[in-house]
Length: 255
Image (cartoon, rainbow, N blue to C red; front, side, top):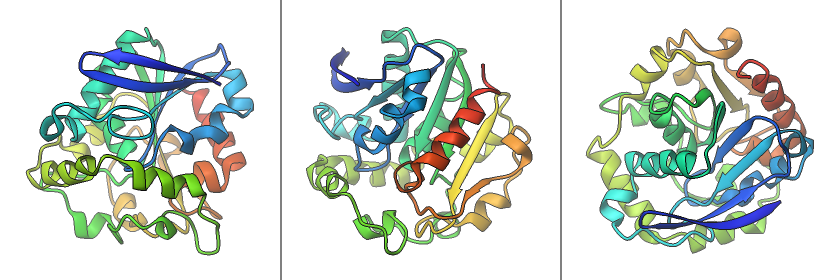
């Protein structure tokens, strides 16, 4: 794994890359986590085969806090960072992989670059305007034990990442969401022209699977949500082998 610091406008980002030379795959982590949550992908056979790139979003992990938190700590703000990173790293034929908040960012970004050829999200219920929060989510509390299935040990770095995240990131993300400062994700996924994979951990304590199943998504991969039976909200960590296998299978439809 190679780590570098990338300057993009006002942002100084920590970026991690696998040694693979294949298709570019950009990994976007969840709220108050970091790129470390994708270590089991970057350091796996998937990372050796494909060029995986993970970043710490502004105010998360080793990336510096945002200079303009009111604007930057929002889904549109994060989307601008992703688009700038795509240009800066000259990423092409790109697959976006988004976990939880990262999935919302991926949806928001999906139509903004011709280089994006597929979207792979998990722990992410696409939201409309106004967002149906009470239908889409089972729980909104940011508690470490809720992001893994019952009985699974929470990695210490999950807890450290949550504690070390810029508090403004959570504050302004919520404020911006309440103001409907985001695109209509249901409309986007309903009209998406590129493949979309939706993965769901069967023991996810945060996301309502029934809500996702009601959505009409013509480009949905295999025409159904892919369920990982033994996972909670973080299948990329809890059941990494099965997760990686699904991701590698999806890559084939985006090359």
